[in-house]
Image 1 (cartoon, rainbow, N blue to C red):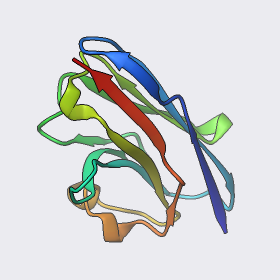
Image 2: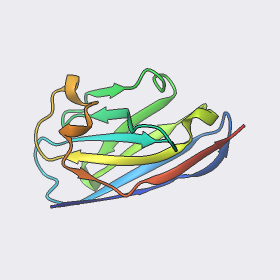
Image 3: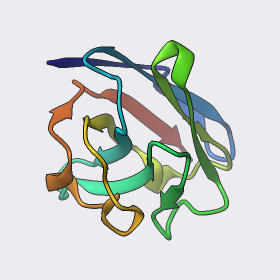
Length: 126
């Protein structure tokens, strides 16, 4: 079992920055993959960014160049640095974890992940 806890959400003005964290506890060793997804009110959940066990990353087109995903293996923690935030980035952001290998071309697929956090709210005001 893996437990995921997100933090770092909040209210920020358009153009501002936030850094989200996702701490993983439990069976986190191995060639795991992690990702960030978000869901805005009335919309489907969408992929934001993902990172494989060896550090390969993938981003949604809407956030590429503004968001950066990273992880600290020693702390079992993943981060999402979000810069130049826009009102359309407002959503609940959730982290996801797969304890097995995930190819980079599948990192954006929600069904590839076995464990999900509760989510953290990010609100960007205009």
